[in-house]
Amino acid sequence: MVDVEAPPTASRGRTSRRVTRQRGLPGGRAVVGALLVAAAAVGVFAAQLRATAEPSTRYLVAAADIDAGTRVDAGNLETLFGHLPLELAPATAERSILLEARDQLLGHVITSPLSRGDLVSRTAVAADASVPDHHAISFAVAASDAVAGDLRRGQRVDVVATYGSGSDAFTTYVVVGAPLVSIATDDGGFGSDARRVLTLALADREQVQALAHAVAVADIVVTRSPDDDATDTDAPTAYRPTTRGVATDDAPDDAGDG
Image 1 (tube, rainbow, N blue to C red):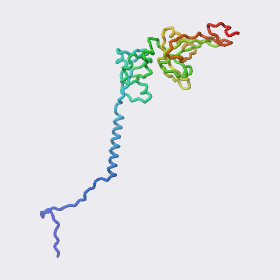
Image 2 (image 1 turned 180 degrees about the vertical axis):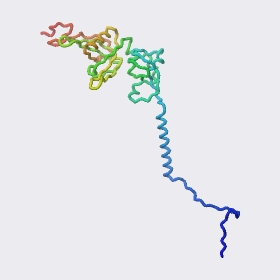
Image 3 (image 1 turned 120 degrees about the vertical axis):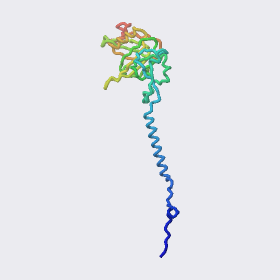
Image 4 (image 1 turned 30 degrees about the vertical axis):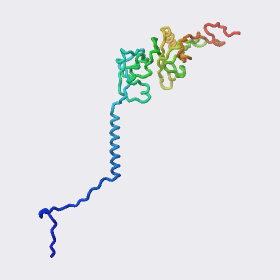
């Protein structure tokens, strides 16, 4: 019989030993995968922050209802305009006025009414030089009767009106060289000719009367003055159609006879 030595145990003063396999480090693919997951998580977190963060660009808004013709000065600058952080579409942002440009509005005139909270657009203000202490009047005209709508704020325009019809009709200038304070588009609904709402600065009440009457009862055409800086406001006399052509008011009825 062969004696077999019992394995060492703690009871005999010796401790048993367990051999374990050492765990290796992660492989390269595992490391790259972990980095990609971490990067994706950071990107999602950053996008969430951007989505919930308040816009940093601040634009001017009307702090109260503002009437057209209001002049901006140091006394009302703070009460007329407030500002809000907004994220605007590029086309809208280009037309809107930044908070940093607020002081540049001093001396300007509001050319179209604004309601409280409205964005202040560059087309809603005009330099004082283009709107002296004149009378502002607005009217709508078909784009086809206003240089196909190809007009810009600050230009000078003439308004020509045709009264009556047939042999009794006559055409005359009612406004010459008036500054165009503002221009807006009124689509007028589906299928209709696009219209332009023009605001002119007129020198006196007689011009206001003449233009208001023409808008009410005549067919009007707006033309661009040949020289935007021209101060000559003389206009030719009215002319009337005849069976032999055009006769001006200061010409005899038989004008053109040989």
